[in-house]
Length: 345
Image: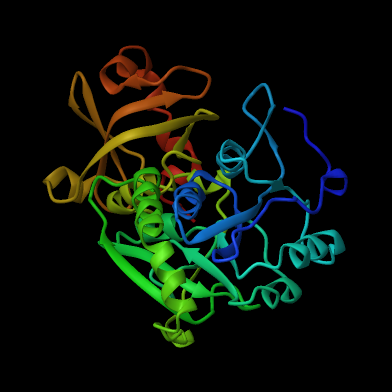
């Protein structure tokens, strides 16, 4: 698929708008943002006049130029799509939005900060869908952050956007329970579907004056960072078994979690934990406990992790019993890495 430079895209899509419909410009990028877009597209009272999303990116080992999920969904619905490389200081984007004259701009995981001139443009403002119970976990990775902390509930927040990050007044919050088996992947799906089911009603209620925006309590705000590949590195000397389990849930499917062993990454795909057995209480970080010929446990700062499925760098994923058949000697080198043993200094 060829990438069309934003400056060469048609700026004013000539699409007849029903006069009684609420006009929306939708801004979003990943799969998380698709169900809310589809909810707007399926509404009789809203018209999505355009979608703005991130540029196509090269993906995978073969670096195939791939469109964002939101772009694919919009084009299937015959909605004009625009992919500006930046928003700030971009007159073409501002001209586009002024020409569209939206009642709302709805933003879901778009990936860029909106400048003030765009925030001030829609008749009823810019509404953001955020995957946390704001003011908790403002920032780029709220779903992962909830899992990292072992939270038992999370939710979605609809807020009016302002210049500060995720700090605007709240229109609606809905909570859900986090299942102990949830990963970032499954939890994002739940939150996205929850947001999609609420979005049209939230926008209608705000437009009709049936909801009053409530300021956030900034004193209770917490923040989360953009995740990198290195966040998946497990430090057995600093992390407990429960923290590693939470980390694996948070970083599934990306960036995953891994141990360093003999200069290679050993990805942990599925694990159990043991916090209470005598072995769990006395085994040091990086030490291997032979549970049986088909099972091992690995010592952490506190407790044991029990891998059931792993993947050595450059190899296929394997159940632990198959991995052990050819790699028991390799495991003896696990404790040699600085992240897997107690410091002697």
